[in-house]
Image (tube, rainbow over all chains, first blue to last red; front, side):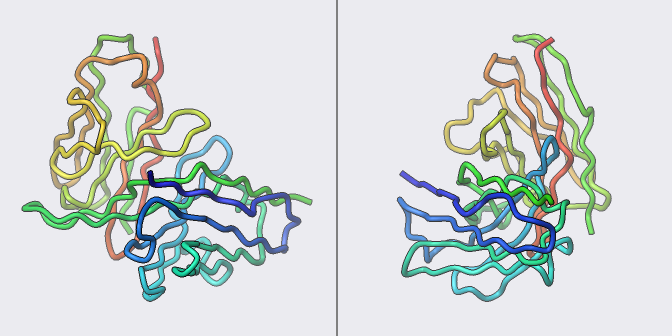
Length: 125
Length: 108
């Protein structure tokens, strides 16, 4: 059974840092790109970052570029998100999600097929 | 950057009725770049349907999608109580994802 379990969330002051982790099990972690997606209170989903299987390339949403760093440790089946210079607007539930790539006659499909339950990050003074 | 606009914001229907949810893209997109997710309160999103109308594992046949270029529709033929949730469309392009703001499907 595929499982993704996030941890590391909490309350932090503006300008502070936090490191999120996502522990994967039930599949060969090194074969999948991984993503972070967040959801502010009462709001919709916002994609944050993506890391490929070998840690390169890496992509970020403009809203977090230069402040957040995604990384992974395939030997430990783990995904990370280092969040620096945190702002009030970074307050959200952060989900990690596995990306599956599927090819058929319609072309390539990039699907976030498994998600963790999320970890709450609150930025407040 | 592609912007996805979902409508309506909230849809109030009764079990057994048909639901039609819209997702409009600011530019032409290919159908294989568009994916739909379902999210229930307090839960993670769940992959629902992708491409021309490929359903994820365990998704019943009452869910389907249609449309092309800039206008796409998620249809639920006969609503079951477990279908009331928030639905998001999502685009993938240039290695980045964009979500619509969501449509809340609530029980009337």
